[in-house]
Length: 614
Image (cartoon, rainbow, N blue to C red; front, side, top):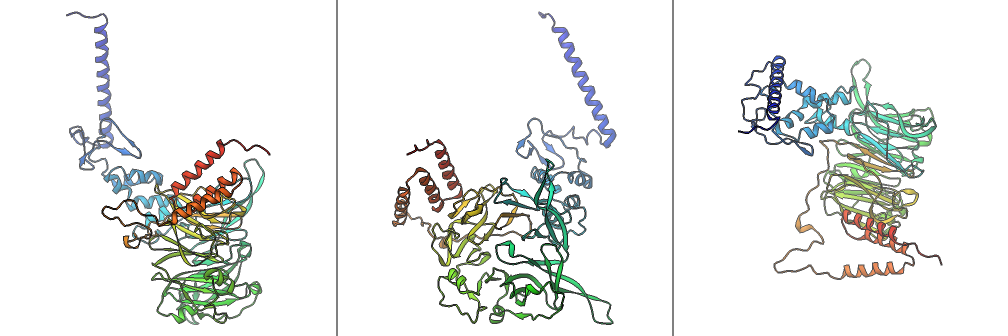
């Protein structure tokens, strides 16, 4: 046997390293036994290396988020998770996003992370002043997610900085349920009935300069609120007063010490938050929604009861600031008087019309002026100026879930996620690809399953969700004043706007100078659409044996010829590019396909050499 020089000392050095490593492992094992009280067998040293005692099954690799651990699997001791209260206490310090990711790793962590005790601790950490967890099947988890996802975002249409900003978040708010922007401020209602008053104020910037900031301070306006409303016109300059539907404790008759709850309507000045008027109803009447309709001198308050009935009363806003007391008459609305068998689920209004949705999904309309009636229905044949409260039924193919009402156009969403538009289409606000008015509900076929729908003065917005669960904002109609970010000339079809949408956005609203989006996620309230039966799908060719490509009746070819003639009529390359982008918006393509063509046209425009000057 031949020994190389230096081989003996090198082997002795390796043995000394192994001896030191064994001593280190032995000291670590003794330290673990000292602090945990586990014996040698309970540490998992004599178990199979791919068996997890906490799960009771074989474990190969552990997936955490988007990474998979390699090498030998982690051996968990038998009593490592024995005290669940300690595990829940440790996990509760994780961020909500990391907690959800941890719950997706294995069955054990899914059960631990989904326990109500963990969510109770998280809810206490997110909202320390929250005393009641609310109601529902999972009250603490619902409360924690509501407070984690709450937020109000806005983007100004004008100015140099056109990016999405977040308003101040009231610490006392338990999620966000509704919001309403007024002339100077924003009002937010949470899930426990607290109405917050978000003020605009002058604040100091990072450079030490004073700047006007929107919704940067908050004040509690009132508690026990159910709903609130203001002037229904899109221009916030008309929203001088805020009407709040609330519940208040009223003293009983003389000699009785007990009190009972009564619904009332309180009127506040939007500029200062001062209460100027209050109306109290009988304790036997319970309301859940309030909307306004009409002019300031003849302002009609429509109140929806828990039984689905509509009551109305008329006030004069010009006399609300006068310190006097008078009695108003509460009367049953004609839609509930003529159709007593119908139970109204919700209602919406503008200055001169009201729309009701019943529990069965039917839609009934009230139109009070002949001009709006002509814009909505295209005729004055059935309009009666002497009986403006007579409800008109809209003919629809399915149950309607929610709607949006503009000045002279409206949008409806049915149980299958289809969007129907009706009314004036002068600026392309119906999104049908043209500017022809529609006197009956017309389906927008390239949009389905929206999250929210909003109709303004002459434009419309749709909040939708893509296949990767990201949100995007689509808009159509007039683009003047930056109302459609990225489309200053407007569009006759719904196009993707250049707005960064929050992940949990659920509602939106636009004023003359700003776009608002409300972020909130309620695990117990979500719009569930049904799948459209195959027999009711319009425009889908039915497969047949031996059939080749579906036959084109000629409509598509004629439309393409018309598009080419429109492009040929443009004189400059810039106009042709703009016309091509507009035509792509008209075509019934998917959102991803439209984005691809629009970005490709922008790239070609950047590469094309500038036209020579004449």
